[in-house]
Image 1 (cartoon, rainbow, N blue to C red):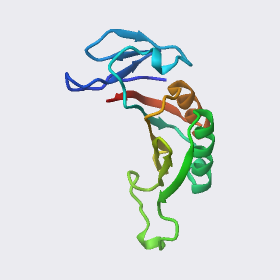
Image 2: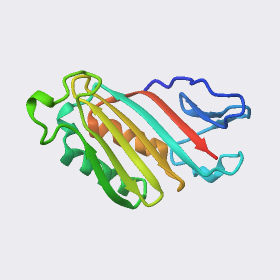
Image 3: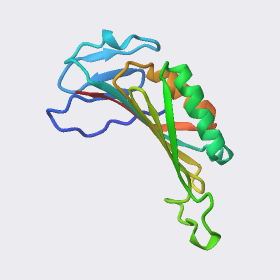
Image 4: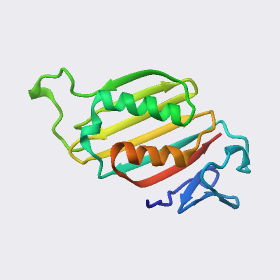
Length: 166
């Protein structure tokens, strides 16, 4: 798993994942261990946290509506979130001549509303890539979500960002 540093405004309280630590910009580096309770992260009070994943080398057979709904159900159980409604945007039911063919648009987008916010997934069939945003005002274990997402889609996170939202 490779973690990249992202640019942020100097006043933006953003966590940057670097190897197995989280760095709060404009603050001290925080050693982050799997299953570390989020309330042990020193900083300003958070509204919530957002985990942003770019997963590549995925099995595109996992990109169907049924698989994505299963992903949401299992992820919510794993990170202790209450799954509410799921909505899809894709080519299901669209005439062949009107379906997407570009590598950057052919796929399924899905929004899973959870009691504490949303989980959004964008799949790209031809690129075998999945882009995931997990946003919640309730604490969750980002390492568990990363490992599950990689395993579920049979891919590898190429870019991972964990952001504190205030």
